[in-house]
Image 1 (tube, rainbow, N blue to C red):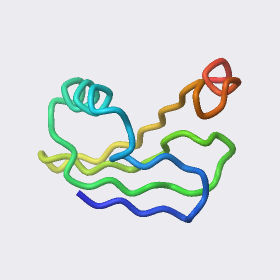
Image 2: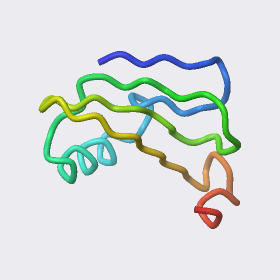
Image 3: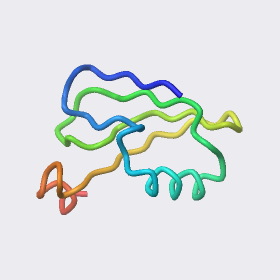
Image 4: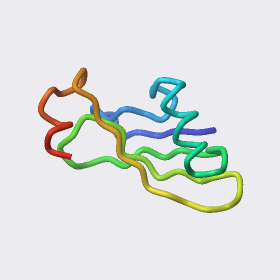
Length: 75
């Protein structure tokens, strides 16, 4: 798995808690094999394009009150 970032405050896929990554992969029905962080935007959470083991690609955002207490309410 690879991840890249623009050097900003974005959270990277490997930095998500393992239980969140496992739950997302279970919901998607496939393992994440590549994660590319998407720069820009205003929330300091995860914003990544994921490539799954079955070839699908998805875009995922994740936020938390620990990184910004206002962001979860905005989403």
